[in-house]
Image 1 (cartoon, rainbow, N blue to C red):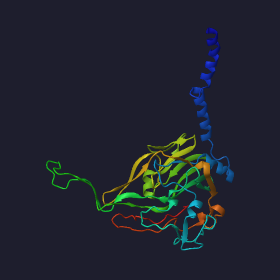
Image 2: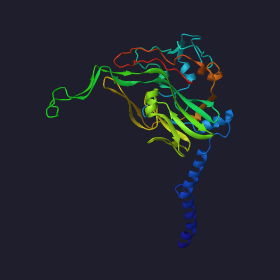
Image 3: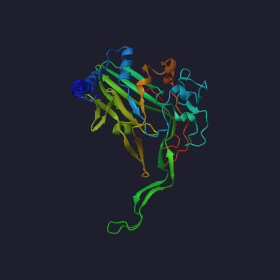
Image 4: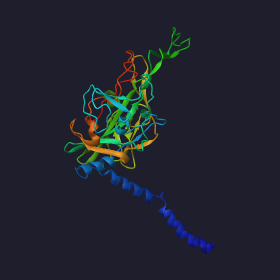
Length: 347
């Protein structure tokens, strides 16, 4: 037994030394990560920029329970018709430049402004859905904008009348409310801000070949300025004030798409981003659900003028809207139940 134990001792030492949990393994992984993070633009050819675009492509975490997943443009166009232009049935290569009066409309009729009948709204498995990257070479600066397409944007449940938030309906006595407080909606709830077609984007910037920043777009420009915008690279993460965007697999920024509406946020949580004049609030719900690894299916093209994109990227010439026309727009909310489809990239 003693002999056997002595024979086993060197083997145990070897096993412990080679274990992935030891310091040697961790330090090796750290060095590998540092080297990957130092990799920026190795050149300015299309191939060089494609390589950099994939290396720094974001991982988009969809929310738990997300029903409205991303898809390719090709998949979406099979389920819509062009209105206000020709041909009526279109593909990425035949979608015309058209004009701002043109729009895409689902072949399956929507029986109500908030109805969700068309199967295309569900999108595709994120593992097979592409992301589209458009890059611009501005000399010392190169910008790569990653565009994400979703066939449907589910809006926000909001009060269609007056929203009362813990209001005392009677006269207070010594600062206390002697009767039951009222909290809720007088007028009924509805889901506002739905729209067919949804384009979201983030932008990576390189300065003098080095990674410099990431820019998050969150709904409109006012909300983006407050909650998104530019996060600067500080060596191993992107940061803006006290908010941080961490990377996964060394170089891929991990961002979070709001449930249903897909606004891109730097972190999980319930993000209240707007207060309506009737007292109700709008918020985005973000959680670490399915990881959409955009680098795995990334289509990259150089920026061009409208009308100059060709082949499978011809859809980028389209000047119309990517969804059905608006319906049911009560003035008290300032939003339609079904909004117009959005404009598309580049912009």
